[in-house]
Length: 194
Ligand SMILES: [Cu+2]
Image (cartoon, helix red, strand yellow):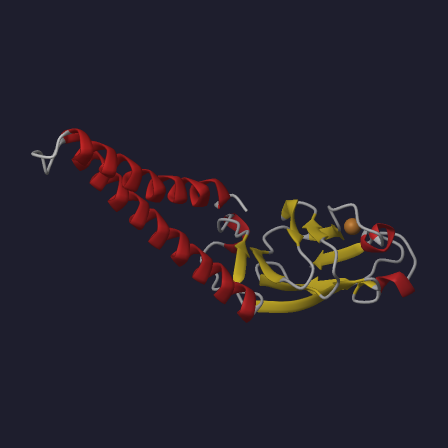
């Protein structure tokens, strides 16, 4: 976790004051508030604030993990001319990712355009909401041509939601963007916008 370095920093800062304080007091017993001591006190304060922030960060992450799907990835296109002024109807889908592929796509061998799986049919200007649930222990990806080309990674046991406005008509490939053990089964999904 990226927060680790600050954790060790906290302990360094908490330990240093005691040593420095004893040292300063021994050298200069008449000075109760030497510069060195004030410097040390400031350091203690910083250490405590950082500790609180770190604890807060851990709590937030834990809650998100327990709820499952608490992380929301928004990929919303700006209302381009074909959908301007239209209040979009929401069209929701759930994609289960595991060793069976995308919603069992491993048992639907085929190719994009001729035998895609899964297929999501929407109308132009609908708000597409796709909940991706990874019930596997390995990471899987999810990408959609044109709408979510960078793709997203979903770790094992996690879920997230991808949302976008279906502004452009066409057939768009839905595929995994992470090299996983069932990768070949996750390359032929389709989003059909009519
Ligand atoms: Cu994959």
